[in-house]
Image (cartoon, rainbow over all chains, first blue to last red; front, side):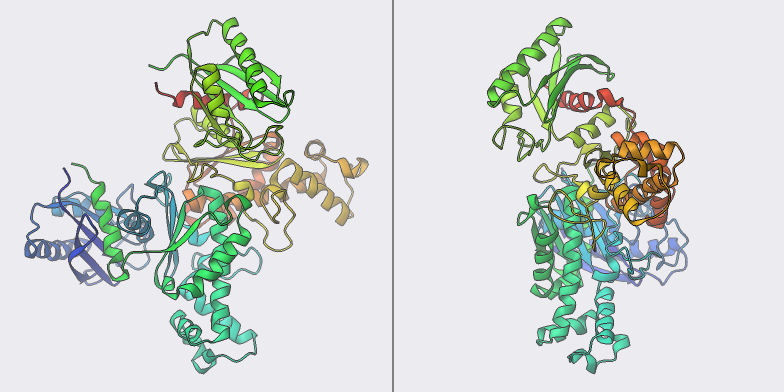
Amino acid sequence: MAKPYVIGIDMGGTNTAFGIVDARGNVVASDSIKTGKHSNFDDYVDELHEAVTRLINNNDAEGKINGIGIGAPNGNYYTGMIEGAPNLPWPSPIPLAKKITEKFGITCLVTNDANAAGVGEMTYGAARGMKDFIMITLGTGVGSGIVVNGQMVYGYDGFAGELGHVIMRRSNGRMCGCGRTGCLEAYCSATGVARTAREFLEIRKDDSKLRELDIASITSKDVYDAAVAGDHLAKEIFEYTGNILGEALADFTAFSAPEAFVIFGGLAKSGDLIMNPIKEAFDKNVLPLWRGKVKILFSEMKEADAAILGASALGWEIKE
Amino acid sequence: MAKPYVIGIDMGGTNTAFGIVDARGNVVASDSIKTGKHSNFDDYVDELHEAVTRLINNNDAEGKINGIGIGAPNGNYYTGMIEGAPNLPWPSPIPLAKKITEKFGITCLVTNDANAAGVGEMTYGAARGMKDFIMITLGTGVGSGIVVNGQMVYGYDGFAGELGHVIMRRSNGRMCGCGRTGCLEAYCSATGVARTAREFLEIRKDDSKLRELDIASITSKDVYDAAVAGDHLAKEIFEYTGNILGEALADFTAFSAPEAFVIFGGLAKSGDLIMNPIKEAFDKNVLPLWRGKVKILFSEMKEADAAILGASALGWEIKE
């Protein structure tokens, strides 16, 4: 029988947050350490082990941990390694699952952040009971976690679900961090929204509260605040963003015919400002057989807990 | 234990071909009837039953059939129905699996043509042993069968894998039969190749053997013959087609990270004429992490047998 708790670890470039999670998706206790403090990866694992053990002991959870799940940038579910993550101080590949499993004596599974969010949504969130859905994470980048037949799609090499890098504009597309042009991520990430704001402000002449800000340092939050205050240009920026995302979701539907898309991350807080144009563009662009039939939902995971929750859900996959 | 044979039925608008297939993918015997002869669907089922029973009896296969698989236009694996197929004479939906199962006393599974080809390739063809691959069928249209974790992807409603209707050209895209514009199918089907030929011949002024033909009735076969004979314009038509398909496969890789793409159908006979530009465009357009790592193969199913073989493979899924 499964033990009553799992550990979720959200490993970011700056902080590593972790928590003890129960079967209902409650984060019983959580804490964090600095990721970049140790130039040696083994020292990082030692500090993480010490901090997690303290959390376990303080919450009477010794011997009650079913497994450890880690969401990490470029984390590979099959190999348990982190491969080529630009924001981590250790040489690639990093044998994360192996080191953690050895140090803790508890089996550890690894995946990337967006897949972790997908597993979390399926285990505790808006996609409970769904066997076919696609998680779209709108943060600094655009990530995705694809679930088919109740299973996360990892692909042949473990790197499936890079939907932020599907090409949405084949001519005059924006430069993307991946070195190509026209990727979904270049338009629909938080940074993409800020780029759209700068483009609109440069090219157009109409009034906008956004003109009062320093254009070079404008953020998606600034655009949101302006839109909520009724600014027309800011609203159009969300329409532009949602329109491209809706076009993309229409194409993704032709792939796996999901029951739902679940939208997660900072931009999801924009609510109807982004959801309305997404839905409108989706129905306009999707094959007629799916028109009006695919749910587009916001995540139901609390954002503060989501990364830990998502990672922790992997801990339930372990049967020993 | 599974019985030694399965029946594969390939239901087209004109003919319904069927055969007895063994576990190694040999078509032991085959025959066909006219699909459109009966305005009443039950009469069609009666004739099909009679013809298949005759084939079974003539080949000493009574009591040795493990199951029946049918590939049919718009066939839905989950419901066993044909839903909204424009080229069939019976009212939609058609309860195909139910009627066949009842009439034959043998369990019958249904899927669409492209998914059948995918199951066939996995069971008997180039994708044997692969758990993650995508079948692309290039015929009158462009179809696809997607396999993830060793399972065909049917999606929430059974209609997944409509990759011929992913949008490849968002501005000035060609009209597609689905009512939208810019679909992959409008460029990379056999009819798409013929359209490209007509466009090239109208817009360009350079010499070509194709100018000797009646432009309005030019076919992809004409373009192939001219290309093989060294015609530059015809070769460029294949480059144009392969380039768009390579761009599409690059995007599909971001979805499910397949081990391979398997190309099937009439255009696959064009060999290097189409394969070289596909591979070149794929490597140019795919995310760097997959460059040079995804196989692009031609189907290994004999075309004459492929539709029956593909459909028959469903018959092995039945465990009774």
